[in-house]
Length: 66
Image (cartoon, rainbow, N blue to C red; front, top):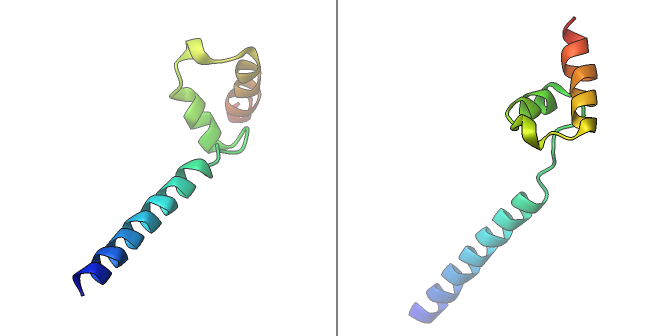
């Protein structure tokens, strides 16, 4: 009886780890130009922005609010 409970527990732990891994690897970045994307970029240090990030941020996040 103890051995079968250990196997079930191990299977459940492995299943939870698999689900966690799937969740981490399938997480997608917000859609380019969306409010969530603008907020994400606002929280990114400016030194890490690319020229394309600046252009897109200006167009979607600043231009839209004018």
